[in-house]
Length: 477
Image (cartoon, rainbow, N blue to C red):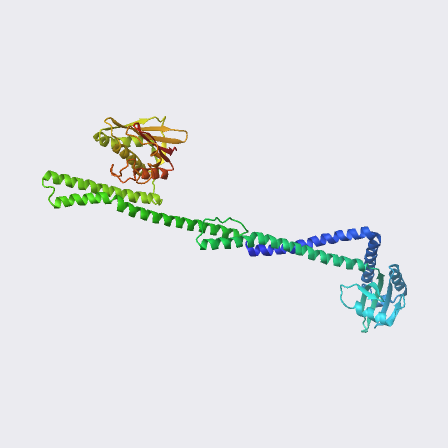
């Protein structure tokens, strides 16, 4: 509900509830008053008023159905006056303000005043004469002669004016107290549901304008205030993500600059040296020139690989690399991988095997190209650090209740335990010299991010002299 409608509704309910509670309190007050001060006189007074009013109304209705001349009939006139006396009242029959008949003596002033007061508001049936309250009924006749005939019936009643005054004071005071209390409650609710949250939103907006995006904004308040809190919190989150992304861009830019200046300098220097050697005539024979050119070519390939890895790692770090997942039979997929790399491994003198320990067909959602890059980086690492004559790399396929496990195990030199936690860091090499092996130093870092992009995990187990196992865990379908 909108705040304006809510505010109007709450105020309307406040007034209605105040009226309702006041009416209930008035009823209770009347009941208590009559019980304490005696209800018989109070009830008898109202009963007397009701009887007199009913009787006078009935007599007036009968008289209005008669002609004025019929009222002058002595027998009917006597009967009418007796019925008025039975009500404790008096009757006056007038013609052009002259008294024709009367059950008691009224002064001319009282008669004039009675005629004046009874000729006013139609719904009024009481008047006051000589300090007494009278119920009256008046029947007016327009005679054919143009004269005016009037039948006026008066009956005194005793009204408890002190009680009504006390009831009125009680009702007004009770209404004001209840109305003020309910308004205070409405103000408190609006203060808690609107003013306080708006105040906290103002403080949060000031912090955001000052660059402090660490504090969360709770969804509180009523209606539009809650929506405003939610919108401001979403804005804070997006601003924080934007700042984080900008920092990431800056870090990656610095990272690329430092990497290009440091890691690419060595192979570029080598290429420059070999080309200068050719130009200076150092490579005097065709064989030596071919060797120089081959070395320069391999260094250029290395530079190209390093640039590709740097760009790929940068995209992975900024979550800008798209994935195209598809349901894949893992056994069939890794059979193809082994077939693709077997010739290259045989050429390097390393045996590559696949051991399928799956109980049946196991599938997972994978990006075939990205996962192939992971396998390639791991197998390339195994090749570089294999220094045994009987080099062997085995790919084991296993499964748990929820996951598919791919273990790529080699029998190379192994990794010391103190080095193991750092092998997935960028540019980290187990060798003390970064030049001990070709490559960008980003292979395992890229592999780890690609596996995590599959919502999987990649970790390593190794022992010096016994080889290394790279283990991948993927969710099964």
